[in-house]
Amino acid sequence: MEKEFFQNGFHGKGAHVDTATVFAGLEWQLAGEKPGNCPHSVWELLKHMVYWQDFMLAYLKGETPESPEHAAESWPDSPAPASEEEWDNTVSRFLFGLQEAEQEAAKDLMEKGLEGKGRTRADWLMGIILHNAYHTGQAVLVRRMLEAWPPPSGRDTW
Image: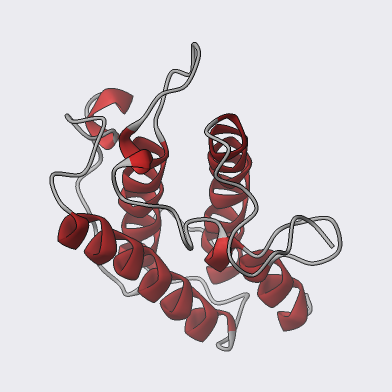
């Protein structure tokens, strides 16, 4: 499997927006808004993405994280960040996790023997890409509904 495939998955290509830009330029107060009947705010989506990205990265590092008993445990209690600092720190944590995933993609993708149910490095990385892609799309939709899209880079899709 091509390592470039994973790089494209982490950062988008073609019609896919670069995952690293989805949260750029969004004011922290807006991140907690739920327009219309949206079930989640951008903040909730980001926190959920960080939760599972960190979870899968832990397996890649040879750790065995404790699985949540219920899916609800992977969502934040609050729909909004408490402060700009909390928002900025969480966005930074997400971006740092993407960098860690990129570093993992440079290693042997077929390596098993990692903690984590016999999955290969490629399996875990694909999990991160798919989960992030799903929720990134949701975050973009919420931002559009908030009239806070596109990001400062101006890149809507391609």
